[in-house]
Image 1 (cartoon, rainbow, N blue to C red):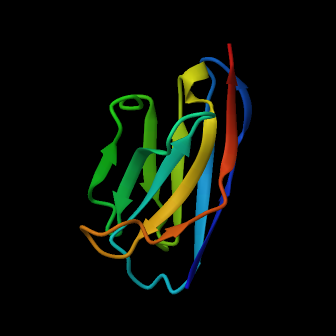
Image 2 (cartoon, rainbow, N blue to C red):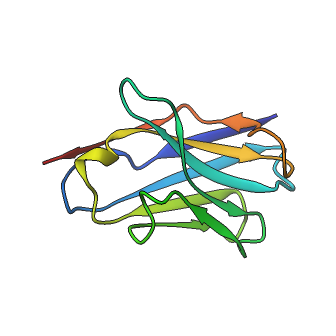
Length: 119
């Protein structure tokens, strides 16, 4: 089993920045990717960003490219999401997720952290 715990959410004004953290514990010797998803009120959960175990490959949703940066910790049990130039439409609950192997559904999810961007 793997447990994921997010932190770093909060309230920020438009144009501001936040840094989310996700710490994985349990059986995390190897995984394919860790990433972030978000869900706004009344909307479906959507992909935001992901990074491979090696840290060599990242992916971003078009809506956050150039504003968000994902990075993995050296111990490979922590992933960060630096969010700059935040917009009100970035308001959502942000979830950390871990994918054990490629081409399969994300296996583990955190409880989520609220990000609210005021205009």
